[in-house]
Image (tube, rainbow, N blue to C red):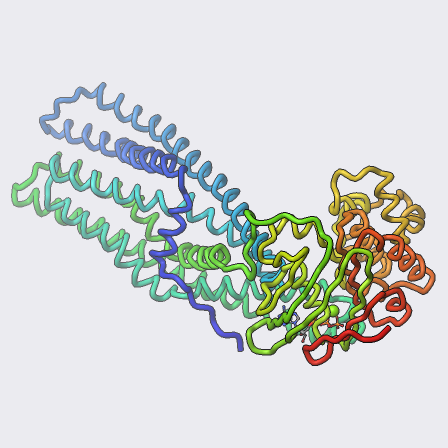
Length: 563
Ligand SMILES: Nc1ncnc2c1ncn2[C@@H]1O[C@H](COP(=O)(O)OP(=O)(O)OP(=O)(O)O)[C@@H](O)[C@H]1O
Ligand SMILES: [Mg+2]
């Protein structure tokens, strides 16, 4: 069973943090609140001035002429429309502007966290975060903060107006009604709705992640004839999601019904109080009509906030996840104001590393490399070869020991500069659904066509690219599935050649290529080596044959072996 995710922050903390993100947009929010409040009071004005007209007809001493009353009624209606437009405009301006800011922040956070922290994060939940979580926050900014402020402002204005013009008893009834409708009833329903929003979002993210994962792995599902089981699991999760959706909808419908009932009861109460006051001659009938009509018309903003909890629980869950990601500490910190180098040599001394401070992957490793050398690294699967390469790129923070480039420790070299000096072709190259040329240019955007071609020749992939219908302009299929593993691998290699870094780390560069292409690639590597260091991880003896020196990793230790 999956454990249910609890909110890590309180609702108030989430709201405060989200409002803090408003920054300089706060004044537009204030504008939205002012427009909304005056707008609603204008809307009330239409009926209240109607009531004033009726009161005057009943003999109430009212200083306004009928003409003026009609003009004020129409004026209120027109102004209401205009202010409503301005309010909605400001709210959505803030919401969408903020969504852009939030997306930017999330991408910024992902950029700092990657690649280390993203290895463990479910990609599906990140996609859910970028799409639906942020959309949910739009609701918060456009339809939560200002309705609350508007409800408070309008309620206070109505209480005072009714008190001064009509009766303070009616104001008291209105005050109790506002507290019941806006706070007490929603609190009771929100205790029922509690966590159902969180569960729904969690189920939604989990379903998304599982579904996306299944689509990505559809080939392996077919190969293992595991379609039925997979489908059953998709159905099971879909049922769970549906159940959570139903529960949530059920709870919010009940909450809405409770609010409607409370409003009706208070309308009857206000009328009863008004009639009683008239009966005991404490209020004229005209003033009673004005006061009661004003109270009747004033519930809109509090009803709006009573509908918030069902949204709010979802908003809090979304906000919590987004804030979590923004607060997540990266595995490595970016280094900016330190040393820049031009790679000449590498020396690793007594390097130890573990992913979770429990199982030691590498222990007191020593190795070195200098320009003009090809270094081979061999060892059983899972012994830590790829891990070592990732440490050389500072994808993870090393434990004890030293990784020194030109005698400078890796932690004292600017991150961008390090990635300019060192490049890696990993075990799996990702190709974007763009053209082959775009995919190559990611290594060096300003490369000329000749340089592209030269890199592809070195990686033994130029002829293949030219055989495609549109050559370098050919679109790579989604997920790069249209290309074979070997072709992808060679494009990855071409990227590395194009980048022109002085230290090239190759993780199994020839595992998927035939011996002819392997020969071409190895020849290219040999030609490159005079100016560069190449560190090569491979299980293939034929590939290892080009290494000048070879290290073997075993049980976390590394030893140089005779070639
Ligand atoms: N992000 C990670 N978090 C925790 N453990 C990890 C992580 N990445 C790798 N490991 C573990 O670290 C060990 C070394 O993995 P690594 O990928 O370096 O092996 P390798 O020598 O490259 O294997 P192969 O030859 O199969 O590519 C493995 O036991 C692996 O399960
Ligand atoms: Mg590996």
